[in-house]
Length: 138
Image 1 (cartoon, rainbow, N blue to C red):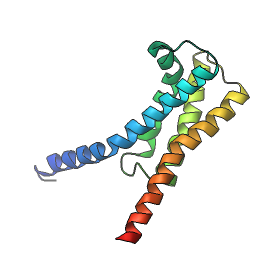
Image 2 (image 1 turned 45 degrees about the vertical axis):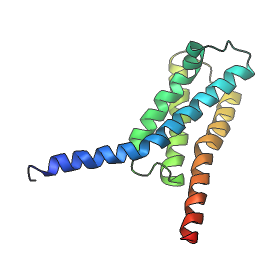
Image 3 (image 1 turned 135 degrees about the vertical axis):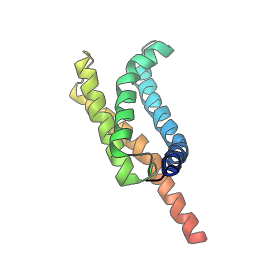
């Protein structure tokens, strides 16, 4: 490998990460929305610390899922990225909750699976549909 190859690879990785940042931030915002809605439906105090307390296992799981499935390469891919990010966020988030003494009742697992599925897959489905329409129009 030539001396110039490493900086080129680093720049390419940086560009890929930068292009994926909006998708990652959207996923983070949706996990925070999920946690906030959950806290609200259980009449929990509306504080930033409380929101973080509820959201952190799922945010950590989201980050791990993004890394493990290489989501930065194709962040809007419904099946190649959305599916593993969704299932990883739910499974690892529940595991982290359980390991730290949080509740993992079956009803909560089901609601989490459905809600995060709708959120994390939903925006990707909309993005895929928009891209298809734009390709047809071009």
